[in-house]
Amino acid sequence: MKTNKLKFNPNNPRKCSKDKLEKLMRSIESFPEMMKLRPIVYDPETMHVLGGNQRLAAIRKLGMKEIPDTCDRRHRSHARAAKGICSAR
Image (tube, rainbow, N blue to C red):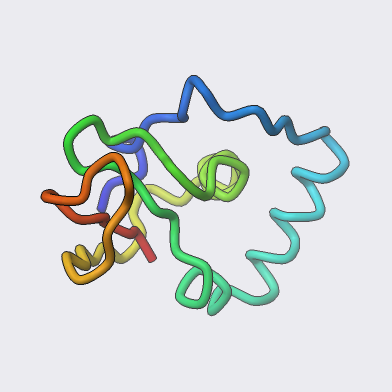
């Protein structure tokens, strides 16, 4: 999954301070397996991130152009029950 395909969720109420973003970047650099344990969840129709907006900001700032992508149709979201949820790990 190319990180530039993912879109920040315009309805995301959370904001990440510069200090917390830098801490998250260091965490991803030192423990990249975290992306497998906590994938970025997105709506495959709109490509808006449903979970992981701060991680997306951090990996983009780190210069990561691609992350592994999986689509799990067994899990259901209330908004996209018929379409499933995709995650970029």
